[in-house]
Length: 180
Image 1 (cartoon, rainbow, N blue to C red):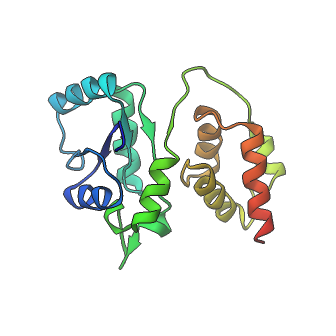
Image 2: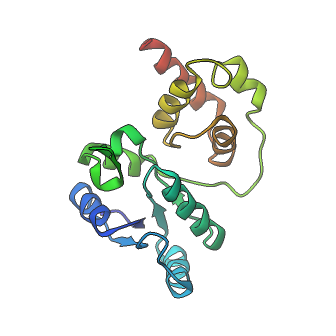
């Protein structure tokens, strides 16, 4: 059983996660949560920890950001959009069991000390920004590293804030290059 409580957006997400792993799961109800819900999550975060697994879309990212603003020490799990898509609908509830298990196993906390391990020039030099296939490469790297897909600026922030080491980064990049 997973120690942390997994926070998702809706009831169908709860079912999908519980089908994939043995864990307690709580839904935010989209943006429908209130201050009391946040206070409850703060207590849970202190006692057991939480893993945020929101849908890989704009609304999911906004919910993730809002929860992080109020709750410290959250871990973050990410699904690729392509792994959470069914008939044009994006959501955790559409992901298969193995992809949910993988996302949760790669959950990472945001580190509290600011670091600049990676800079924009790294992304440009490695083709992760400014090239025709940059988006695809960031998506593949984000999946391997467990930090999800995002634009170049956010990707750089996640590399630094989730404590990705240069060694992890290079290994992930080599994996991608093997499959090209």
